[in-house]
Amino acid sequence: MNTDWIAVGIDIAKETFEVRLEVKGKAKKKQFANTPTGHTQLLNWVKHLGLPQIHACMEATGTYGEALAEYLHQSGQRVSVVNPARIKGHAKSQLKRHKTDEVDAEVIRHFCATQQPEIWQPPKPELKALRSLVRRLDDLIAMHTQETNRLQSGAMTGAVRTSVEQLLAHLDQQIADLQRQIDEHLNQYPDLRHQHDLIVSIPGLGSRTATKSLAEFMDIRGYADARSLAASVGVTPAHYKSGTSVQGATHISKVGNADLRGALWWPAISAMRYNPIIQAFVKTLRRAKKHNFAIILAVIRKLLHLVYGVIKNDTPFDAEWALKKA
Image (cartoon, rainbow, N blue to C red; front, side):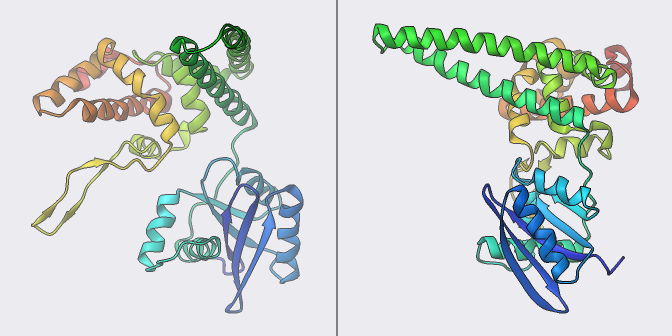
């Protein structure tokens, strides 16, 4: 381990971020604006403290920390972006009872110093662009659903109904334009289009699910195995057992990308109707008397294993081969 790299804990918020580090055993803390100017001020402060090399660690909490992570990476610093569950677990191991920005930043710093988490690499520009397009499409579809429900409620005057109808027509156009842009983007990057087509080869998974998966996972090939991919969505089993007398119910971890987990719900139901591998899998679960909710979650996990398989092996889904292997 290179001791020249000083662990820095960063707790990210929308408008600010809290920083904690230690210099010769003395704690240092400072808050900065979560802006390009604040990012520059952080490195200037670090250099003023005589620390040219830092290992900055932050939680993977949405998009608020992405710009800072990229700035630090481009500046030649080490950066780790960690699943919040790991930080929460570390806080419990340290018996931390309070939760403030300063406490969180110190917990992250201590985690970074003692656990040496893996170094983060920024996503490829084409994947960032795809994720931006896909998330915007999701927002527009959510708005369209909301306005459609409002229109169907019937509790509105003629003027309001006209306004809603005009907004829906505008949203229809925006959604169509974005879907076209996503398709054109995939065509510009043959590898992305190839991965998209591999995922679509799995019965039950359509184009929208494929682009959503590519956008949110960023680099499916970078996961160590299929279980890691499923764990990032929060659909791996979480067990609760202590000794021989305490045995809690097994449930899914839910520690991961909840948005992607939700996006896979209806594709899982579709796969239960059209995918022979999933159909055989569901029969086994039903014989084990699993309830419907648990079955759908298990199907989502199984689909993620199939997604990992077609991408990792660079081979379209083959139901006959998979059934023989099973």
